[in-house]
Image 1 (cartoon, rainbow, N blue to C red):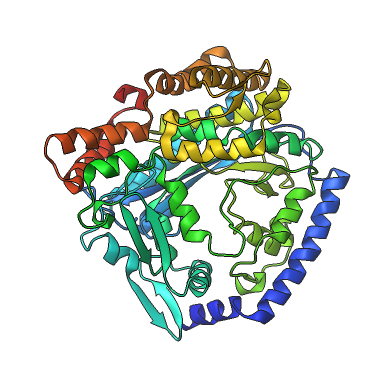
Image 2: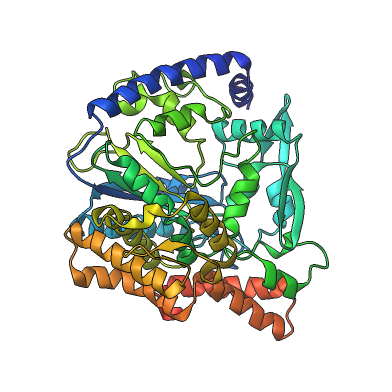
Length: 506
């Protein structure tokens, strides 16, 4: 405990800030030069995936993920109830994408089997709603203070998380405000951000010169892709205000509350850290944005390891750490794990707004759609980038609130600006198919992955609307909000584990 207290105090000191920023600036200069001279370029596109899940007990209540799951290959996340499954990157080819699908399934199954030894199961979902036995407020609010440093009891024991938490509490006078339909309360820790889980597809771009084209195109896809994938319309019912009208909650709740959870838990600096990023003009802009972003709970490398800086990741450790607190809904990752026998010098788009889907099939389908769409937009010289940034941002927040019913802005392949959902998604899927075909993916494989997502548009049913309808049915039958949400969640967990595709639920 004393070591953690010391690290947190050092992280928040002025001396650390000066040292940290000096290193970031020097590393950024070298990265800008690497972008200019092409040393971050690669022969082709690559893909990867991160998937966050959470643990529940046999009664579907939130539970601590046992260490056995991490020993089986899962990685730790913010809360003790969270786990993350990561795939090593593969080339963007049909075999590479299928390898990704096999990896995510194999690793999830191994971590889930290991969790079972601790009477726990892992859930592919975007928001936990059945609280542990002590209740959501007690669980999320349990803290201890040691020598002036606050420790959230159910947060992962990692000094960097504790430093982030204490930096946030310092900037909010110890009370983090959270306000969404039916809920207006404060929390004493950023742990409430661990309510939400997501998937994050990665797309490696071959050349730095063309990176801005792909990045700016991807910004304009955020709204429609989020609308297609929404999956977090409810929070744990014991967090709703006493006397909250169930019908009002149903009518007003956002389809994707994860957006509000993350933004309200972390947007505490003078410039919001969680938001839709602006367009970039030059490759070097991705470095400049991170350098200019508000400093937040810095760490120095020697506090974590004394190994030599003999790899790309270690050479640019402080810059990468600052990037890890650059929480835009789309960001660039410089470096990372190699694709095949390649090196770790690469440029990747990290696509961040997609909630974890009900089944692994849905997770994989969203990965295929996202990487195919971004590649297809540039491959076809699609006019979507003529859509204004303001409309792209508006689409994103409309999607978070209203899913497929929201006003989504798009530019079709023939240059027509539209908000017609059918026209939009016809063009979106056609473009994604073109991008996957350009990567050598066969038509049958593309159909297998994308048709279940097209079914969502045809039926106007996303995971979030499925959840809302189940709760609405129970409320209309006389259940209170808590009973209705809990019953829906148990049905969701059972179906997510017993079916291969969300399309089977429709």
